[in-house]
Image (cartoon, rainbow, N blue to C red):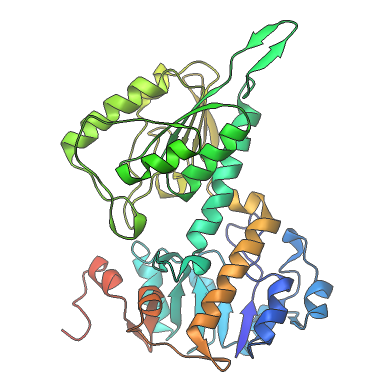
Length: 383
């Protein structure tokens, strides 16, 4: 089986990661999986063509030659319609796809008879942990979000005892205690901030407190923990009490970092314009849900703006800002996934198996994923 690694093209010129790093090439080769790399694919993450060749990869000078010999194309960003046309009919694609909302993309992949494997749909099970790209990249995002906030905040993060007096520590509120949120909590604490955190899933309270943060309680017995560790939609009554709790906390904070997402849905609005107005001048909001319309009502995706004296960061690709380790982690995820989906160096897909069935979206010209079919308004396969 030959795996192709193209240069990332989305967003144009801004993606610095690469899907497979040189270190993975040798391990894949030991399992009869050959790797071809488009020339220059790893340069932004500081991996040269020579680095790849030294570990057994083949370097292709053009995308056409790369895809022509590929059984599986592995990339990071969601492919464009033009990129789908470049793929060889009948080949496989492993990539972030967001198939629950990108319905036209799914149709195009099916029409081209591409076996589309969504890296963002891998079930969050114990067995799949080493394949979970959302978690690995969220680790980078949570870390970088705090560093960005610290760089923009016109105050110190830690408490300082100086000859000029005592400097109080910054107060940070983290909304959402998933992988990104927990990493943000840990990073902010290491920088010396006082941290509070909110999540609709009561089960994460212990994790939040174990990192030295205070858990923001909502006066409700409702628990919005959903399947696979994700949050589900909360009731309107809960949302009202949630907004009251966040409003009461955020007005005292210097930094808010929001990470709340619901799969296949618009990110929930947790920070209203009124809440932004209540924050201290010079405060910072980093919205990690910006790509899915944001947790803050005033977030502008891809931009950093100042509204009501508060700096609001709408960065949509924090992992790309730390390309060496982000690429390394993504690559290890891909190694484990490719090995799971193959046998004796060939792709072997059993849709009845949990990880395979959970991540394969299109196959043999059909849309085969039940949740995606439902989201697209299609009848259940075989009905």
